[in-house]
Length: 260
Figure 1: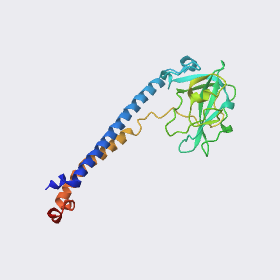
Figure 2: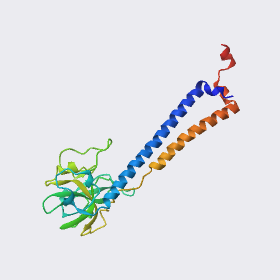
Figure 3: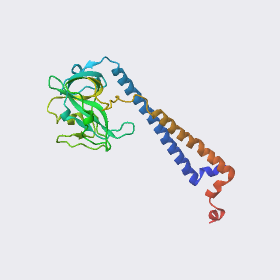
Figure 4: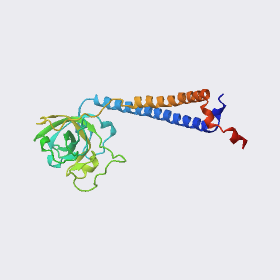
């Protein structure tokens, strides 16, 4: 009754179904691996956030390479914003609206500076460089925020010019911006959470460090495993239906073909 399932196109079908199912299972386990990575990173970030807030210069010296152990620590730093050398980070959306981030050097009393991501401002083209409505307070400011590493360029990300003074940039490239500033700059940036005195207007919108949820990886893994199960269960059912209905005969050689 099922001898047809071991001939011709049916054999090819078996191989295709098994190969695709194996691929789907592999993709499911890949998503589970990504889930483990996310959970490990989130646990690390959370543990560092729970540490006491520390002065920036107690964790890192200006000009020295930042150790991974200082990232995601909550820090305080006091200085004066150098608004003239503020840089816009282009093409950053918030709740679906185009805009950018404002990255402003905060110059300490000793002359060293740290880049502060003060938050998001709206921009119709996502690339505007002038934002007078988001001017920070003048004078000495005390900033509290998370200490973060600069962003790395992805394979498809736009590259910024290596030379010149940039007023806008495609990513938070701390090393690139350090080269255009006239003072020593810390090799990490602070994502603003609070400042004293506060911002006189509603802009820029303060940002949170990031989402510490597990993300969609578990649901994606379940989907891939379900796709594999559908193939492995559905294909035998198709064979059974074909055997009962005689549909396999269309795939078998005719008597005339066998005779010739």
